[in-house]
Amino acid sequence: MILEGHELTIGYQDRVVGTGLDVKLENGEVLALLGPNGGGKTTLLKTLLGLLSPKAGEVRLDGTALSSRTVRERARLIAYVPQTHVATFAFSVEAVVLMGRTAHGDLFARPTSKDRMIAAAMLDRLGIAPLAQRPYTMISGGERQLVLLARALAQEPQFIVLDEPTASLDFGNQGKVMREIRALAGSGLGVLFTTHDPNHALRAADRAYLLRDGERLAEGPVKQILTRERLEALYGASVQMIADETGTAFIPG
Amino acid sequence: MTYRRLPGKRRTLSGNSTLWIASDHLLLVKSTRVAEQYKRFYFRDIQAFVIREKTFSFNRNMVDAVLWLVLVGLFLYLNRAPFAFAAGAAVLVALRFRMNVMSLPEEEARALGVATGPLRIAIVAAATLVTSASVATAGIIGWVGLVVPHLARSLVGPDFARLLPAAAILGGGYLLVIDTLARTMAQVEIPLGILTAVIGTPFFIWLLASVQKNWS
Image (cartoon, rainbow over all chains, first blue to last red):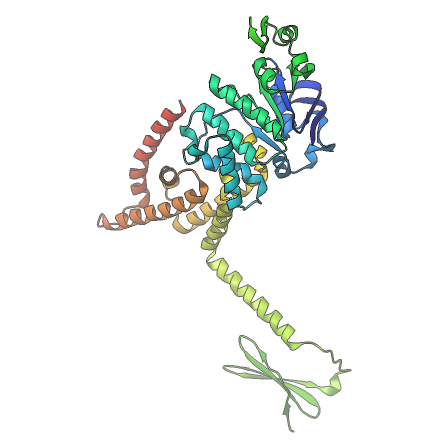
């Protein structure tokens, strides 16, 4: 399947955030969305998810308009992993992951044994099965991010869209989430994520999409696109590059 | 004059009607408990007989169905509060897992496949029905809705599958206790609202204080 944004003008009721944006995401590929704060990353994500309708242009899924599908159909194709938040209510981790099965049942459905099996399998896949009965409010930020990822996986989607999946994580958990993102693409999902760290894009993504002030600066394979000059232009700040035989890394200068 | 009885009988609430045939007229006898009425239909006044086949049972069934509907309608009308309560509660219980998802931020709920707009309207409508039916039956009693759901949530957690029945049972039990106290504590019956306020106010102050701690 292909998820694409065609000539998108994105924004809110009274404010245009970006214009003329073309995005394309295929199954089995990871796309990283980079850009400074307020550049329109989250707005673009929400538009591609169908949570926000584009002010012009169209989001398409295999050539047909995303808006022609119901909320439920969309949720079975595209899953959303929001930035980690502290939930108001103390649902158990298992209950949160089971919410990922919502779109697979009808309006009055309750979780079936199949739903529970899938939820358990996803918790297991991310190595957080022991947390299943813990309240979601009583686990660490890194664990919460993994729970939200498990919930997205429980949706059994074709695409997963993650909003700054590494933002609130410690160093070790950042690595873990990056590895998971690669593994998701390996299992045939299309993954789109935003990040503030070009190194994460280098490590986990196939392609990078640079967004500044609502305009596409560049797009292409990460190795070609992520250069010191481009990043300096993207963030309007100096950037240092360190390279040796094992790879490349960027440091804000 | 000889009459011969025609088959069939029409039953009404006030009595039975039977038809008799004579040489030149039909006689309709309508007998109630206190009187009998006769109506004669002379053949010479009648231009033509049209005989239509009609299944008698069909009419009977129709009459029965209408009568039944009227009776059920009357019953529902006279006892409407419990039925309204049951209808609203049934909707809420059926939607319990969707309501769990609705407690997430709006965009997350939609990304999980819940059409939040229509569902919110349905939930508010059902909750309004339940509340108004309760108030119609019991009158306005303050400090119940503010106290009991929070108490129920702290007992069984936020999952509506358990929270809904817990809050309903706890609320009913709470009022039963309050009502008993109100009838027995003094020579005269103490108004319920006074008792619920005496218990509810400190609880609510405690709740505000603890929530503030959590949110800051």
